[in-house]
Length: 193
Image (tube, rainbow, N blue to C red):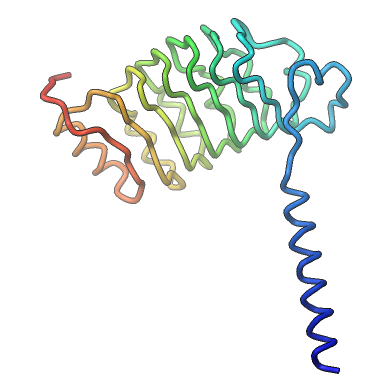
């Protein structure tokens, strides 16, 4: 009797775990699938390697987005992102951005920001409004530091500065600013900024 009851409990547990995993799996929509997609059913869009030079207007109607991948395109700017109030992960890696898209500062649910391999030099002070930010990837950008206001984000777990020329003094400042975060840094350069 006990073994039968235990077996049933194990089966129920496995079914519950499977249900949780199923709910967490999101369909990532491609550009050609968006035309016929219901506005309320799209939570993730994958437009990486789509050869984009501007963000397609159609994506702005999907305001419930949680995940947006615009990486490996040719975007010179990324305006309008502030409409995605539920966005948790934004990937703008390897585009042609020369400035930090200010609309990102209005993404209050943002947890992961990937903006590496762009020619961005400055992160704006308003980044501090992204209070749920956990992971920031800045590698191979022109950024050599971050605004002090970014230290107000207590949720930051890691910041990747790989490929950025940062001297010993600057690295020490970064470590002091983010003592509880994992900072990924190249060996310090003998440079002065």
